[in-house]
Length: 101
Image 1 (cartoon, rainbow, N blue to C red):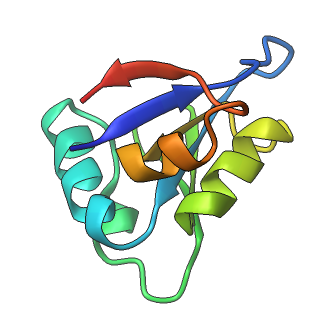
Image 2: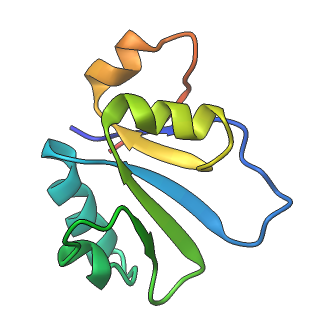
């Protein structure tokens, strides 16, 4: 199960930044983004890289650990983040569950 969390989406920047959780959710998230038509080819063959630019849309992706995903969103580095339910429950006061994927 994938959860999407949103905190303080900044309207002052043109591009969207998304923090993605490394590991178990990574493959599912990348598959869903690809199926939705996002240009995530770089995420499929990432090597050691942790920051990626979408090839189709104006979106930047960060590939981080689950707790770092929450931190990136809370500090405004990323606009939204994809984390597991366990991470949301551990950080209940800091997150908002936008969508159950």
